[in-house]
Length: 336
View 1 (cartoon, rainbow, N blue to C red):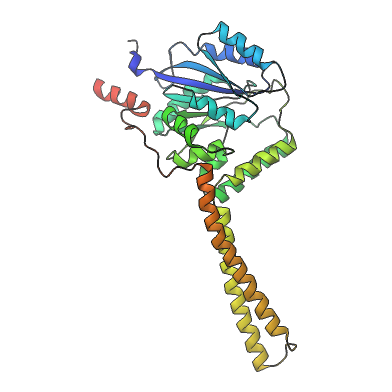
View 2 (tube, one colour):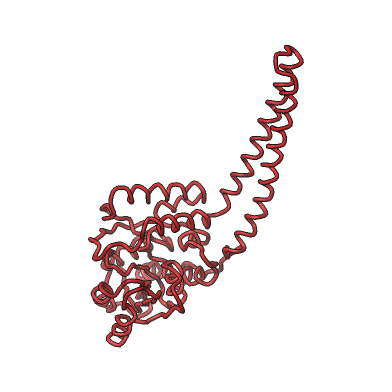
């Protein structure tokens, strides 16, 4: 029995385009086959309702390819940015312009297989989560050093942000549409997309995928990757600032304790050089006071940072039982 229209999960595919002249046409041709209704491995009905190509003013002739694809396929929608803003900003622009029940983000180079979208959707529905990241089953073709550095960077962000999903951050993701569009609306300039998603998504999970060989050399240099990591650290939250406050308190307490110890030794034995005790006491107490004061200032800075990044105090969503996460569940309950 064919699925009715209201039981089909519509999916918007967002592709930020920077250097896609050589890869974009073939990759979109792969995705086109999923624009007709299909059945996922777990039996859910879905279709890709739109392919949003976000032009981010790269150095090649990607704009021409986007125009040709738009003319050839009604499902392709171009998004033209005024200048180069970077991958995350381009992805946010595409998410804000989407209209599907779900949003899938993909890179332009064809390294990810769009056939896995059905697996991602099955995972989201089975676990009842609005955010699914790719979990590559093979190593990325970037070399040992870069792969190790990537894993280390994500571990650091885990600690700084307190977000255990940071280790799963990946540019191939499935996001519940209303959450993705809301994030695109409030996220401030320069905010790291996955950090912003972590602010409002109750939890995230992963789905297996196989990385295909790169069709072109990565456009990320060591400098750009370092900049990328630093932006991730800066937007991961205010835990780093609170560490400053904690260090200030610890140093102040240790300074007072050590000052008392020196004073007792000087009074009881007189073995410490004259003037040294008072000098150390003043330095330790001053250092503790300075660091404690910096900690207080850091807390105020943290409030300003959260406001500047656009972190929302709340996010209103529809009843999960009535949305895409509950649609197939309700249908099965009715059939029973």
